Length: 233
Image (tube, rainbow, N blue to C red; front, side, top):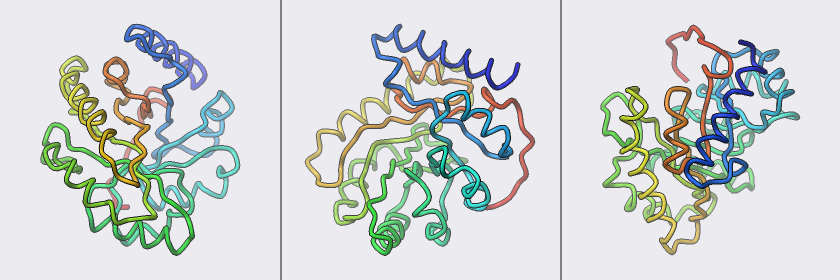
């Protein structure tokens, strides 16, 4: 199937699973993950209603930005090295992968230099996988409290990448993320403005929606399988 048919099916699934869990489908943002996707295909997805795209690599985001910046909002969703923050700080709507105080310090510094407030999601390693980045669930509350001093960062919510297993087996992890999200919303801290729970990808987004996700990040489901190069940010 083509991009139009893929998006139509995904939107129908979003609606189905949102209604199944007594939620408004319009409250769920479908973000297109555009790693290795060329400009023409991204523009095609935009023409069919995609408003937000997620990029994993700093260089790739910078390469695409001049061609797409007027038509779509960019998000950075991959692991972010501190020495690369300066290249994207004024290009992205939100950084989804804040996972260390070292990175927070750099984001805050670069945002201050640009006179902006950077929206960020805290990445949580919900399944404690050694191959994944993110703050341990038990450390998230203290980590967020430690971010109180950073006035140019606005904490908008949480993000996770669930284990790549049978989708139903992800449900406990998504449920735990939702509980964490709701508990942190209650913390009285000036830079907490929790709105977004970003979880669910092509394999498991239906389960993520049932458990409370309001951003789903879908690449393969929209653009088909892609060949990935092994490279750094």
